[in-house]
Image 1 (spheres, rainbow, N blue to C red):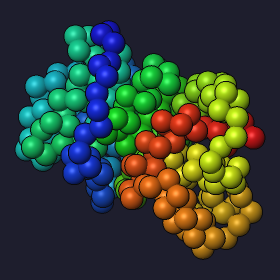
Image 2 (image 1 turned 90 degrees about the vertical axis):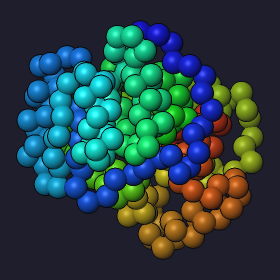
Image 3 (image 1 turned 180 degrees about the horizontal axis):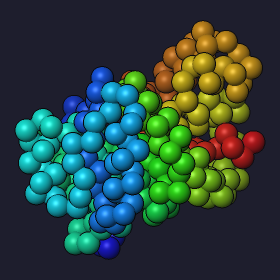
Length: 235
């Protein structure tokens, strides 16, 4: 597979998060995997599998006629690879949301996926329950980064933190930022940090003002740029 190109972030209005029914295309070149996954997805409420395969022209046609609003995309693909597919999708007149589901998990691949507009990233080893959780988060307009993804980049995150020394943010704010960027909701954050959901919302507002983020995507990009994805798992 070709190395993913260094690409600047797409404009915010090119990133679409579906709500309501998820009309999914499973784009993977392993027929057994995509067929089994599609069978399971078909059992999830408000989820419809509208396509399954690795024919990019069929995928683009489905997107152009508004049939698919979410693509589960592998990265290890022939020709231009998954990032090439994703870049082309985001330039369509009606771009879908893209959730990466791949065995390739590196800091570079996660960062590139975010820059191209992915709503989440899961390892192929993720359980069906975690895939359902990711879909629920996407349906709510949130991003989701799997446990396997956080573990894969955790060591590099720790090295970056040690090299940086002191941070502009407090430890509590960094922990909140890391969990928000991963897609945790206010209730989950409150339980994990022993605070109320209301306090989470207040802290989130202060944090976003502090780092200059106006949207959730900008918050995620800040966490990636500063090596803070998965930081909460190392403390």
